Amino acid sequence: MSQFSPLQDFESVNAIISQLRIFGGVTDRQRDLILHRLEIGHFKKGECVFRQGDQPLYIYIVKAGQIDIQIKEHEVVVQKHHLRVGECFGEASMMSMHAHTATAFASEDSKIVVLSRHTLIQLKHDDLELFALLMMNLARELARRLYLTDKIVLEMTAEKLHAG
Image 1 (cartoon, helix red, strand yellow):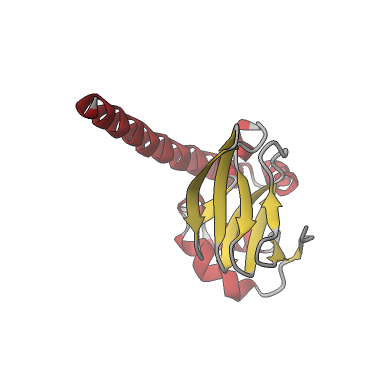
Image 2 (tube, rainbow, N blue to C red):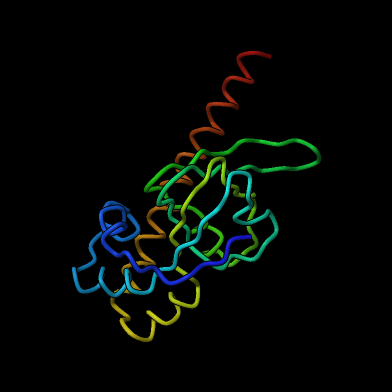
């Protein structure tokens, strides 16, 4: 598994970070504070980022390549999502502090930028306003995803009723 190291090339991820909803509303000073605490990892095609059941340690951001998210239960595998550059994952597990419910792996050689749980806790002490803003943004993003999931479940239930 790839080890993460401190991010050195801040400009290469600044444009990505600026577009992510979880970093919405941060000041330039706060964005710099975040950028200087990010880490980066390199994953070869097929390499696992995390496994279903692992404890959440990071919020992940795809910098290059593609990451696939799969859920497996009793030999049934569901391809949940294909994540591309600029997309974020792992935040639901981080916020809930529950083990990952899916497995993430690189479907091509990929670079991933991470914000660690440790860094989030440190931000709570260093910049409480920034920490609160990040938590609010994360909660908003998770609420959006829950809304979309509810719509999918409703549509699938309606299709099942009409088919049967």
